[in-house]
Length: 384
Image (cartoon, rainbow, N blue to C red; front, side, top):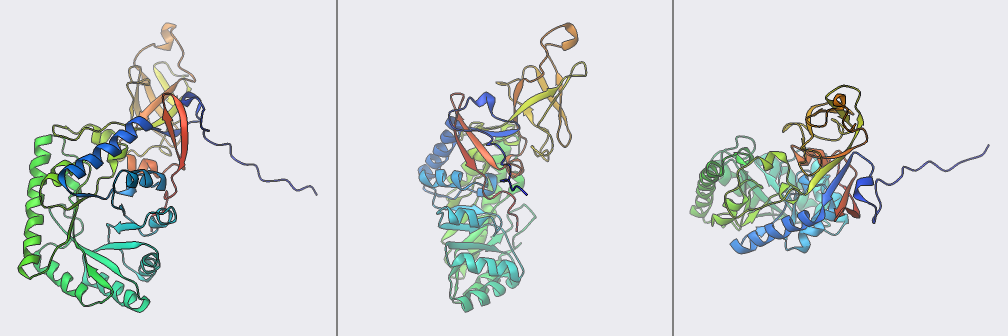
């Protein structure tokens, strides 16, 4: 019997290739816009004297994280423990888990990571502290712990100063744990479309954050780090004088959900992430079908929008099936004898970049219409 080597999947793209010949669907990153966004956010943080700790859950790629660190980020946030491993292996050494975790397996994972990285974690219940403290004492590792406070989101975080002080006391009971400050994030206001409304909501959230800090100080507890803020409120949080660290994530790419926000202040970001897609069927009058469906774009924040620079004047995305994106043809109707768009390429702007990126294995970086690099999304699917 003759043995054969396994058949390998062709690469999605190679450097030097024309961007219009990349196999679709694919995640394209406009490198000029991407680099502008990274530099712009780093400049904003530096201007206001706050640390920048970008959230890696938005991009799930160590290559992106390293680019952010090269522009002055002090470390990164991860949302899940398993997400940390590829970043650690790529050389990222300062990581904050900005989410709670429970259970023996998760605690064991945190202890393992703490042997290799400067690890900080988020808690909002004494039982979380106790489990971590006992394990860390036994293992001889040091972990920084930041209680999360609820500043209006109504999701995670202690609701009042008494609960925060109880957590601080609990942390102090373990020599392996260090009280690092507080996590104060309000995700619910990130997408308030009106800039002034968003600014006022951020101000109210900051006032609640300040009250928690004052409660700590009244007990003689120093609060070295106040961390939080997303792309939608980061300009207000950075300028507040309360936050010492900001955690924007989507800013590197942007998406249609953030794109519909009003932007009236100093923050000016560019759309750098697109889904390259090909029209693969034009059988129905006034309709076209592209190869970008639910398995290639998240629709929790609405359907993707066809980029105006790549077909948006001719097509509108109206429905998503597993493997198909349904488009209306707004110009050049085929029944009028005009050009059949079969095989035409379009670029989609996803409504929500975070879960969209988690669907792909690589980013295809392009500049001036040419593929410059292909980067692994090496933390995709890591949700433990």
